[in-house]
Image (cartoon, rainbow, N blue to C red; front, top):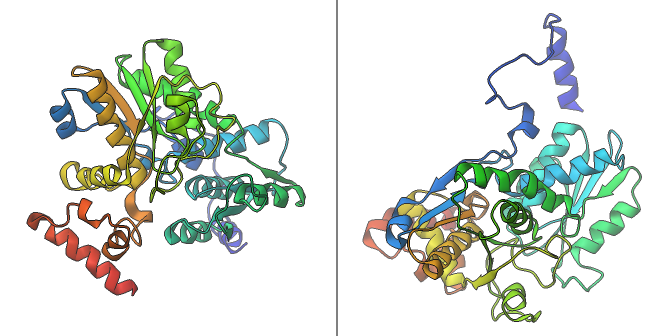
Length: 373
């Protein structure tokens, strides 16, 4: 409300002008919504040299809300508006590990909706704080399996059912999520590689990215390989390799990826193969990207790029492999970039901080721990 009053005061002191959109360069983005998508495609030079393939990634961390999930968030709300399911001033409700919620919260601010988020209490504190800063009402609830009625998704659904003028966006089973990547991410990859992409690989939580991108690219060239990347503790590697909904060993430190079921977004996805990426491999690649390529990203991004290298090894030299950088590392200071937390998980040794030339980075992480203790 204060922001509305401030806007009104500012408008009173300005002369009335013609506010119709002018014809600027096509590069001009209109508002937050106009910033979603059209991210750069990056080639990792050192990894490409080492593998003999072009290892590339969509810079999804450069979306305005900071993650690949901005695309799904936009389409989840867009479809609800197209169907007349939400009226001005309504409430958008979602169950999310964080990034979809952050995207939704941004778009709700831009469009004048309220935002309510249910999320597992296993997610980073930074995500919760960002959501609250964006004005979202956050319910952090115990992490339980999907078949438990206290699962965060079911709690979000029930909350929406009891709230007037509200929608549950249902990112896992609402295929507008998949549509977002079929209509935007897939075409962007095709255009940016000039149709020369040989394979794509993505980790999955909802399944929207890999299903949408894979479906679009297969429509352009059925020979393009679509490879699912899966972390510890998920069922999808075993499902797509062996047809069994059986969890792999372990429990991953990555957030927002891995799954215990086949979502509606993932059903029928044109997946050719799957690779398993351990936390050790994901962490090693995350810190390789930081120290050797200069990209400060989260562990799911490290997992994706580690998977791209595995796909390159499977296909051999001379191929173009594309994945994505999901989000930045700024949401993970208390975990992934905390020495004490990583040591408690037995993963600090894989962060490359033990090298002498990385001592500055190690001291930085120690200082963060001291400041927050």
